[in-house]
Image 1 (cartoon, rainbow, N blue to C red):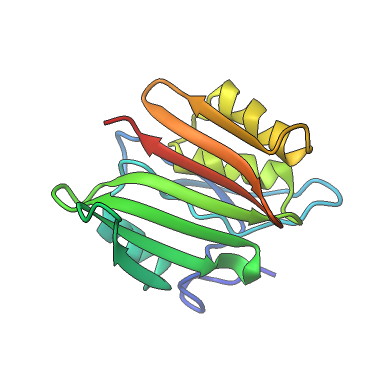
Image 2: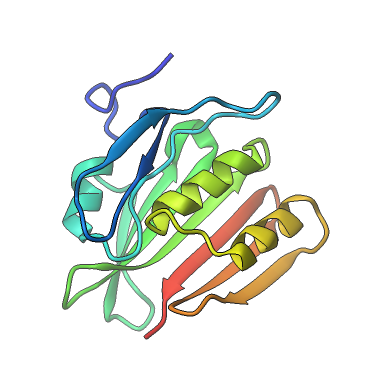
Length: 171
């Protein structure tokens, strides 16, 4: 059963959305879940998007705060999609653009859903190194991977009962 955003603004529909950095038009397809994996309602916004677009799409954040160094604002959405996903966005106070995304997935979320969420947050392109790092942590081959992805940096780690992925734009 799909829940429309108008019924609950903090839950996105079960869709795959491909965002092009040059376009604000979304292409939407129905997602077919692999067997034995949980389908999640994935956030479809990420690095480079405007902060106001995040709030208009996902609703009021669970919490809002200044970053540790005070130059950025952090919007957090806890228990996104029924306790399966926590999402945070860090925006630059000067430009209003998202420069860091963090997402923590419950262990019940399937690898395909995790990879699709990362693709959504990176405008459709997930570097092979990030895919490999996520799979290694997901499959228990390692507890943490730190990655240099050219224009981005990322960290993937097993954090108690969640798979945490943080991606940020290089300064």
